[in-house]
Length: 252
Ligand SMILES: Nc1ncnc2c1ncn2[C@@H]1O[C@H](COP(=O)(O)OP(=O)(O)OP(=O)(O)O)[C@@H](O)[C@H]1O
Ligand SMILES: [Mg+2]
Image (cartoon, rainbow, N blue to C red; front, side, top):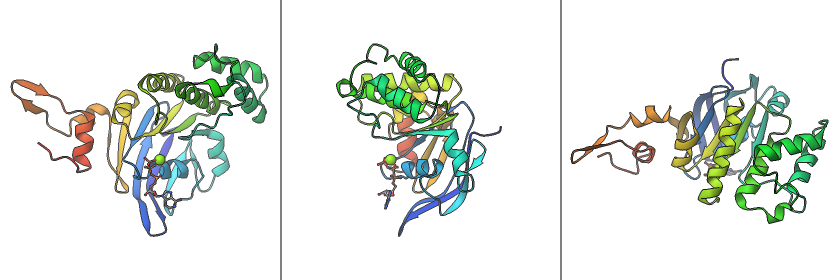
């Protein structure tokens, strides 16, 4: 298979508000791709279109080789989506949440699947406790674990660490890296530059309805010349690149 995700000329408006004005990008299988953009840039809109929750006005998108408009059921069987607000049940334990989802998906050995996922996401000790007692990071890890039941080849994480403290973010990052290491393709959206910097094999910046730049971190950094500070060469950070490209920072 060529690309895990292929997006061509995607357009979407909400009434008079044109949010996507021709979005193009590709995600290689088994890689982590970060869609970076400010609040309201249209990141969730892209994720909703790719996960068949929303129809594009124009353009095309392929997910796992299936067209989102013509083969939505095949796309849904290929993906899982973890939104910004965790979908876990507070009253159940972590393990019960996992068993429930495995049963809903008609999988055999729901208990074994649950135990394996608890181990993979460092939740074995907490597995027997009600989710109501979990920290934000534990909930988000459980949420990601739940979305992996049935082993979808592609996972969408919409702002996986928004609202988490630094320690919890590091835990979630480790879980995401673990996913990619096992061959899952990850598309994540974020407004945190360091998150993209830490996790992504490739980064795309969505701004004013279009992808204004795509590349590896090293490629993005090369877009700006290193600023000379006295005798020390200072490499631009991803933040410098981002702010310069979206026009809120003058290039020095
Ligand atoms: N159902 C809707 N009806 C009308 N406008 C919408 C709807 N959904 C999103 N929008 C608008 O479209 C724009 C893009 O929204 P979207 O949620 O895709 O952005 P985002 O990049 O995910 O932002 P955030 O970082 O805040 O999550 C915003 O201006 C938003 O207000
Ligand atoms: Mg969003």
